[in-house]
Length: 447
Image 1: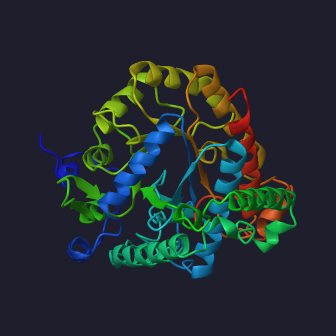
Image 2: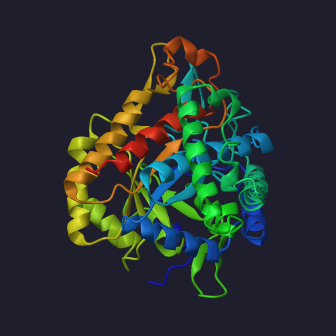
């Protein structure tokens, strides 16, 4: 059957909100369909080409950003600081790992969150679950938890302003490699990771002075600008459909809400609406792969999501947990390798390592996150495949949401600055430390 943006409506769709006023919801969706695209098809094609090089082992993917973006934290400073951390991580991995780094943010659209239950109970009171600011509010109040379709338009507006700022930063000189020292956040600079980063920045500056002395033009565009792409989970299908456009050059359909979309662990059913929707758009797409998936199911997903076997089209994002990855991932690597699917393999070391403290605070331990990354590289080394990327939840703020790291945050520290509206994120120090650990794995001869 011919795919259309509405083909998904014939399939079971999980994780969709129930709008109390269906007419207001349809009016918001109709308005979205008239809005300009947030990204352009040519940009998405360019990202597919970059990811194709990752699939062939010639580059590395860094996909990072908030677990769930907030309508309340969309300031220029917050966006800039998040970009700083991603640029720092990429610089560390590219300089030490020796391969180009493709930079993709979980930003400018990551507003919806899947939930394990439709309702939440606190002190005997049951309310609808918080599904991200694109649907309702995090406050545990009956009025706040009512799905509000005007939030769809707010999400679009904030995504547009965030994208505008990101383009200004990455194209206007802020991402110039000569600014490599300036990317080090003040509260990070005095940490072990920050000092280690400054050493790399000094090395980059020395290399640039050497190149300049050899007559190489450091004012080249490639030195002054970076390609930075956006991504989010394609969860609210009415929103995604409304922003899907037919490309005037190729005639293909593109979801113009982000450069890259992914289908989550809870919605990757082969016959489900989310897989059906993503099978027809020509953006590069991702698929979360948890510990319960078996090789046959994964191969079937590869066939549905990338039947033409286009390198860079499909990224498989593993989220196994540090204790399970070494046994669950190798059979999947072997199956996909033997079937000849040109996928990007990326490691999400966050979601499989989440737990709650005794007082019910959701957190992750830095040591478990690092251990999963190391096991990921080892599994690929054993399979003869390329460990293509890292997918992490982080912030540029000095939060205390994940345990451990160079400052050895403990459970009592979590109360200091626990600010996430959903899942715990790495702070800038922990993110930079993880970049060094990843770079060491990348540069290891055994890798």
